Image (cartoon, rainbow, N blue to C red; front, side):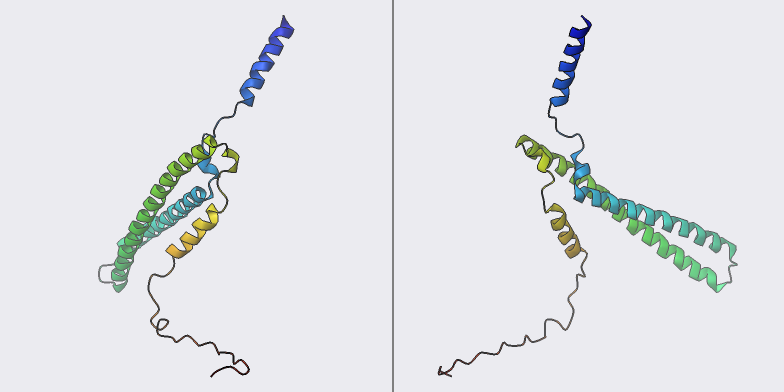
Length: 166
């Protein structure tokens, strides 16, 4: 009796362990998603640093007398820091939304690969390189250099063939 229960339990366990199921969180393997989350974390750290800087500036501002010129400079620094915090919050929101979008895309793409029997090949090769190239181009300067378009390209010297027409 005990042997039969043991073998039946073993067979059920092996059957359940042998089942092939799709991953629950395939985006964790996606290098693009991981990069987006790391960018979001970097921006969050920058925001925390700027908030601490702002608190220090506000304390300094309150301690200075009204007639001091440094108070005006501190007020300008407070305004600049608040503006930077606002921009960083927008960047964090951008990275958060991009990561959520990539998460949805990664899950759909993984399911397509899984249904095609290529679940082990996901994420496809070259995804990270394409993403890095796109990221490099998107953060490149968006203004043309003034003198580059007007530079002349040197002409290649034509090779003279012996006895040919000139």
